[in-house]
Amino acid sequence: MKQQDKDLNRRQFLTKVSAGTIATVTAGHIPAYGDIPGKTKTLAIRGGKPIRTKSWPSWPIWDKSAEDSILSVLRSGNWFRGRGTKVTEFEKKYAQVMGAKRCLATASGTTALLVAMQALGIDAGDEVIISPYTFIATYNVVFLNKALPVFADTDPETFQINPDKIEERINERTKAIIPVHILGLPANMDKINAIARKHNLVVIEDACQAWMAEWKGKKCGTLGDLGCFSFQNSKNLPSGEGGAVLGNNEEIMDRCYSIHNCGRRYGSIGGSSAYPIRGSNRRMQEFQAVILMSQMQRLEKDAERRNQNAKYLTSQIKDIPGIIPHKLYAEVNRAAYHLYPFRYKKEHFNNVPLSKFLAALQAEGIPCSGGYGPQYKDELIEEALNSRGYQRLYSKERLDKYREENHYPDNDQLCKEAVWLSQTLLLTTKEDMDDIANAIRKVYQNRDQLT
Ligand SMILES: Cc1ncc(COP(=O)(O)O)c(C=O)c1O
Image (tube, rainbow, N blue to C red):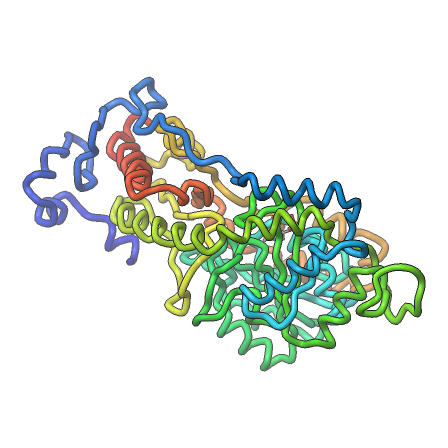
């Protein structure tokens, strides 16, 4: 829905709402619709009673069986994959659940991305198209390969890379696109894969926030050449630290294995042998693997619940003026909802900046944050471009042009408007979603108190 369509004037509003809701009209307000159960007029940030005082689920959640399996690994003394079987078991199980031929477990999501990039031949002096709206690791892995991360602006409606902004960023040095399914919402993989095919580029999905998300019935992370996942503590599938690469090409997956295991041939784990490829140690530990296998038992049920609650929450907040829920592409069967995002339009809140809205919502008992900033303005970019390596690898003209083009107005705007709710808030009930919607509505209705 367009913003102006949402922006009801007073007369339109009165023709739309039922008589019962008109009681909420207060002088000087464009009313939202519907009264808030137990509504107080004073915002919690001004000393009023918060909408919610109950706590939200903490994370991670585990049970006794997880404790037992960790203890058994501990007592076995087989703590690394070369002496145990747990990492291999996890790889088989994760590949099966995700619908991929092969899985390689790694120490983290960052190392999964590094392995995937090397396996697909991304090298010093190459260029890689990425989204600016992502966790900094996606920038870093490109820099660590001495390649140039070239950003394509964000589509604020979906929070994903805007596929229509990718082609203009491609040149003869471009080797790959790394779409990020950021926040666990799928990027437009049909368009991205079509562009990659047309320009002979490889696609590495950064699915580090997108376990169990689906695009046209296939899991995110299985739609490109390789897909990478993170299992860091906060993630929907957590093991403290951890990661994985998924792929269907045996030869490429063999190469991934070698790269993550000091360059040894696929199948050999330790000792010295011939080294066909450069590699390092990016192996997962047996402890991580048993935690993951235990966490996987709740993965499907949690994914379903997050989706149901997200859908309901969207239905409850979508008509509040100045609140724009994220959009999912029509091809999305399911999102991972590592975060539930919406946009805040301050014009509807007396031009109060996002930080004050967030503080007011938090005071009402709803944990929330403002998300990523415009990281491409951070010092790491110049630090890289001014380094000896980059000065050798790229011409002055290329680096100057890069600096000139390093502006992403849609992403800048999104950074000023994004509101994130954590995945744990979605592991609750419909009534808990009502608390969130009521809190947002209360802040809207009493927005005069924000200034
Ligand atoms: C989008 C994205 N990419 C990459 C990573 C890196 O994963 P890790 O922290 O496991 O190294 C993360 C982790 O937060 C992420 O969210």
